[in-house]
Image 1 (cartoon, helix red, strand yellow):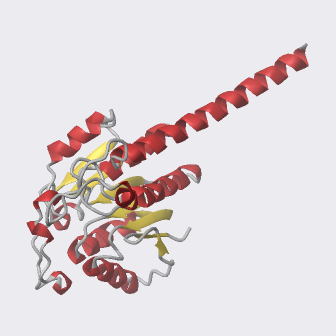
Image 2 (image 1 turned 60 degrees about the vertical axis):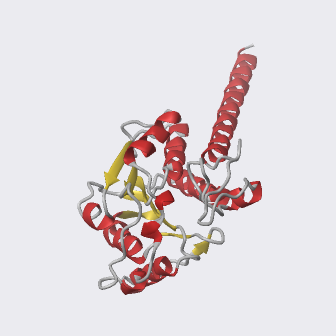
Image 3 (image 1 turned 135 degrees about the vertical axis):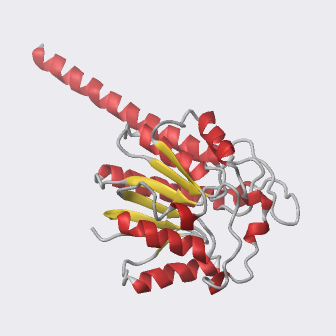
Length: 267
């Protein structure tokens, strides 16, 4: 009888664990679909006017959605999940940050992953001007000469709107921190001790280089550096290579999709 009770207890515990894992996976899968708005669908607002919702383009992260909280697509969201789950499972120390957050969807998903795993000792940092991209400083950063992204009103999302988006998911709490302002002003003095995830989505040379210059030294061994728009924006790509060359970073770049790459800092 005792053996039977022990066996029943073990089976029940294993079933509960399996159910918990399944529930977590379902929650995170649904979160990805919601922040990208693959649930109801919305048109894109690319320069040139609206285009009807196209689920295939939304999945791969092409186009600026009218309503969705992120534009990065499923492969880049999958990459975030892979990197965050790895640093949790391997206990790589440090917080998570995205530089250039738009409506906050990628960071909302990061916070959701931490919550799903019961991670209470890490923060998600959002660094953004919350007023769009800066005017290019061609004298200091010639690679940004002629860049016109600062003229795109769709890329300017207020701090209040991003905070409101977090509230919609019940994820605005003490583990979410905001660094409002231009990167050149906020990142050098950012009160961040250690990072496990560094995700850059600043588009321009200046935004990319300044973020790497100030934050990469804080990235833990075993942490991940993710670069959005590396493959489609020349200024971003040049900043990455200039920084890697300057500091002799040799970890290979891994492709995420048509736009983004990442690498893992040597353990």
